[in-house]
Amino acid sequence: MKKSSGEVMSTGTRISRALLFLFMLIIAVLTLYPVLYVVFGSFKQNAELLVGGTNLLPKVWSIQNFIDAWNGADFGVYTINSVLLAVGVMVLSLFNSSMAGYVFARKEFPFKKLLYGLFVAFMFINVGSVSLRPLFELAISLNMNTSLISVIIISAGGAQATYIFLVNGYMRTIPKELDEAATIDGCTFFQIYYKIILPVLRPIMATVALLSFRGGWNEYILPLVFTMTQAEKRPLTVGVTMLKNAGDGAAAWNIMFAGATISIIPILLIYIFSSKHFIEGLTGGAVKG
Image (cartoon, rainbow, N blue to C red):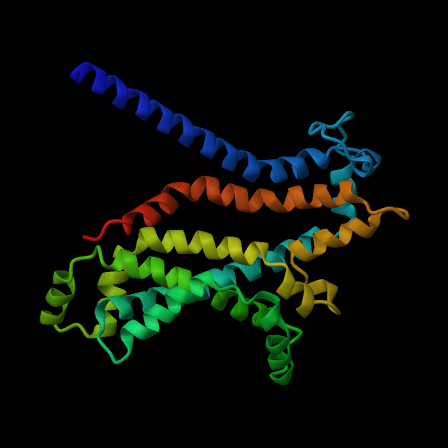
């Protein structure tokens, strides 16, 4: 009987592992297929893309699309704009999330749980285009509608709830004895933050930095609206889509795909070299210390 029970348990484990593997495989295919379609499509002729079909690999490989994309768009200016936008969003997100997460984890004040609950609730709410018009009108009233500064501020504020949640979770793994020892040594609340807490928050700060940089780099709707009349301030995401109109009559999907592939490379390289810190930050706050 014990052997039979062991066999049943072993069979159940195998089935669960097989189902988990199948589920992860489906998720991987759904995630990677659009990216691979764009990358391989960047080597295809436009006629092949317009006809469609299920062939992922191009019939004839061509790098002319990349040459046309580079010459057809001011990639140098667009890249600088994208870097400024992404870095600005990252710096502002790091500053806000680290301070807010520290305050929520260490400070007691009225309506703290209610305010934090609202932050967490907004993690699951995406206002999107509903807030775009009032934000743009506010930027016009402040004479900031022609600057990327507005885009940086709005983009940084959009995901603050998620970043604060991550930092607050990581803060709970840091012993409060560090704060108490620093207080005995005469440190103020803010001095504890930048002398003691910030150095310890490096793993989760790396995670927030990567997420916020990616968010700023991939931002499309806001830069499109705010730079509609100023082509020299467009980031790569907006400039690449304009390549679709580079064809003679028909949409030049091949050139746009080539431009999109070029724009993917920087953020991909950043993730490859910082993935270790990214995983450490996510897993570090998963277990409360």
